[in-house]
Length: 258
Length: 284
View 1 (cartoon, rainbow over the protein chains, first blue to last red):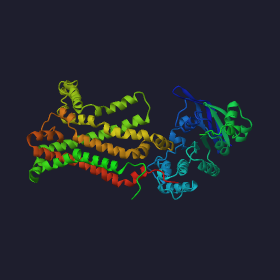
View 2 (view 1 turned 180 degrees about the vertical axis):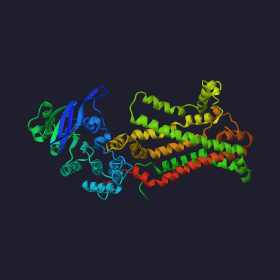
View 3 (view 1 turned 90 degrees about the vertical axis):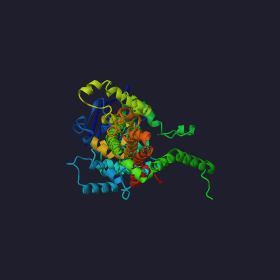
View 4 (view 1 turned 60 degrees about the vertical axis):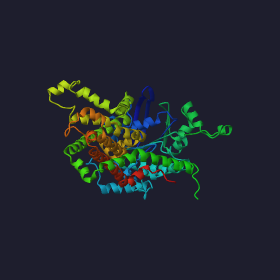
């Protein structure tokens, strides 16, 4: 399989705080990868840097042979799904989904009939047909999430990036949506990276999981590899944290995972 | 009888509050407005229209509209720029800038006018240079425009900034990451999200621009037919011919009412969109 994304020694500071301390990671075409870590580990910053919403201080991001530094935000063609969806509140569902197509420079813009066709295909894909004339405020959290996903898919992204895709949803919907996202990934085959702090989510969904802590990559591997051979104490402890063994009996207070 | 709203106040408090507001508005707003029209028409409709048709009145009306036509678009543009700069970027001195925008609200309009006299007047800082180049600012239309612009510049900015702060920049980021240009993002994402606040700010700005007295009074020089705006003209008339003063005052009141009607019409016209924007998530 070919490498879709190469992350090389990314460093990033916010004022005096170092958020990413030299992160390197290769992601293969069509892979579904989870960036897992506690809050403040730098996973969202890494995701935003790949998208071009932040700029790294040092290091390179390569899409195949192309260095992302040469690409403007619009040329990166990254489908980014924000944690709180960032849907355009004054646009209907179909206008939200069509946005990326309509915003293209005139020469590359598809005809309006083509756009409509694409939108209805995407509506079907995310199972929202019939809701195309609704406004975001009239949708449930799960529906908004799927609109955001369809909107990101509309631009035929080279990468699909999801920031805490299930973070704002309640448990029942999270589980359903997780399964649904996995199926969607199988069907569309987009190289996908998602950020989460929930290891169940990461391990159930991802082909490989990358564990971050304090701006460093602690371990990358398949869920089985990581579970069986944690690379260091941090990973072992981080994984152990959520096992519902004795701690649950000793402490009646359930530890919050998000 | 319907059950009382568990979190509401007692009927007594409720009707008391409503009565208080109605009485207050009646005495402070409605009564004076009614008196303006009553006084204006006291000597009959003919006198009323004669006062309005007076060349000085017409010239004052023209000047007021001209000044508003320059000051309002400028301040709308300035307000947008200021709101954009202070909500989308982080930079040192940002709070100072926000405080500066508020200055016209906290400074007496007379001082605002005086500042311009001290800068551009015959004995002002730039006075001699302006005189050498035959540029009239004070006691001329440019001074009136400047003073009006100064006094009204916070209206639009103050209306949009809190809204843009509340909305954040995520939608803009989404737009850019979907491949839209900065300009496209502004027209299709930012502007639609703030258009109601912008419109409201523009209307407030316009109302104040047409009604401004203090600052304009200082820089105008009160030259009849040339540098008198409607409020200044009313003041002069008040000393000479009270009925005429009230007649002209109805013009200003009329302009204010037109502003109000436009606002209501627009809100009614776009009620669906407004409702959609404000609607919260339904039960699911």
